[in-house]
Image (cartoon, rainbow, N blue to C red; front, side, top):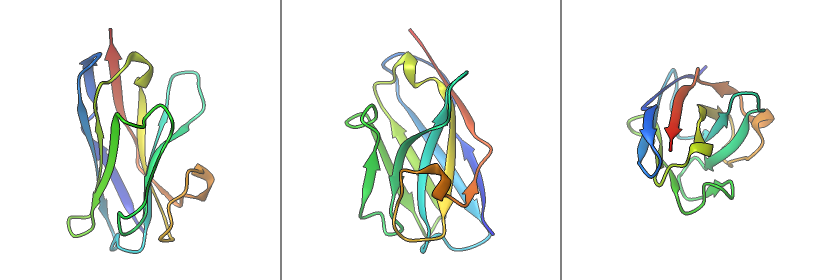
Length: 124
């Protein structure tokens, strides 16, 4: 079993940066692919970024490419999402997720464990 706890959200002005963190407990992360998803008010949860167990492969939604960077530290059992040049449309609750395979996925149905989310609000 894996427990995930996100942190680092906040209220920021457009153009600012935030770094989200996800702390995992319960088992090693070395065999788990992980990802970030987000859900804006009134919208369905959507894929943001994903990373393979080794960190060697990363994937991003088009709106995140060039602005967001996903990374992980398997020793510390941490997942990160560095978000730069934030826009109001990035406002959402951001969720960390893990799946019991080494290959990353952009599909949320393929993830087995989820955190409770951290809120990011970007104002113009």
